[in-house]
Image (cartoon, rainbow, N blue to C red; front, side, top):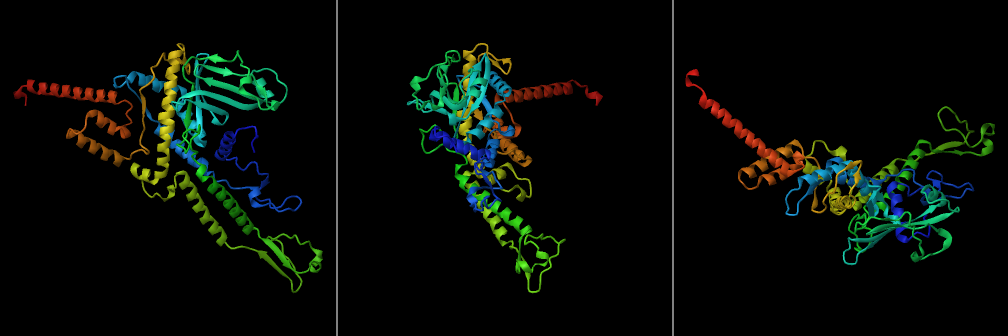
Length: 491
């Protein structure tokens, strides 16, 4: 299915991508309902494309990505100063940068693409404009430091392109054929190389010719790529993490073929095969054995003849559907997907009840929060701040923010599901009781109520509460003064 010139890792990632986008059966030439070839040869079922595709793997990936970076699940960015105090001004700048770059959509797409094992986010300044680009890792070869497994030393981008693609990219005219495109991202520069003919054999990378016109020295001191591993795998030294949906691929394929065969059987039941039990020469008018079977055509057979329809009962279809439910549950359980059925919920459930219903999915998304949040989004924000310090005239979506200090950035994640009115009332009563007993501070009380109030900055909310209390006290003093100044004879 893939060129042998690609490394094994590249071929594996490309195969997983075909499963994710639903094209894993496209290389099979025969449709499912074609049982015989043109020469009458029987086509086995495993050589036909399923007519029904359940897309269970992509469903689990989409659900986990939505629970990770959707609009109601986007984390709150918290910035601190060197002494640990809240840095509200820097938080405001980072929030505006996230909004201008539309990082929520970028990270959600990165979570979907990275479900095969890994994903890379390239952040660079092109003509003083900040550009964020998501890259597939199947054509990237990372090199990590021996002392810090998270620190990138170099990332080599290498893939095959034709001469027309080189011409459209501005490389000029090349003879027709396929070429290796190679580019290196290092800690101080981005190195472009001249394309190499694919048919030139196995060449060493020492023979690559640097393209001086396109190579750029960025001087960041770090590789401008954030490499995100999807899930912790068995090999910590591997550039890729564990695939989200690999454990459910086999069950999904069996389910697709089972559903396709069930649909084929149901269609046959609606139009079964007719069998005539008589000699052909006895048919009236020398009729052809291929006869219409609907009620508008009557069949006249000689005495002693018989006509039957090869019908099947519905027990096979019911058993197939039961098996399909078992395969679906097995695949979702293996991938930690959501096995709950929404049509079985008869009343509004609390946020905690919904969390327990989707426990496997929340566990999966909780692990992804570490990969794409603490190791992904935070690293992207720090890299953006680092570039803003190196490039003085950096524009972010047409806006100038100036240098932004990096470091001391963390994330506060929202609850898995929005709390109901009953949840908020129970939470408010618990916080009020704890605050009246002086068991918690105002800061802690605000943080406890954050899931219900969606407070962005605890410090700003605390100042607002303090101002409201002062204004309330001043109003009470003013009312008290008016009562004391009044003449008792006026009553």
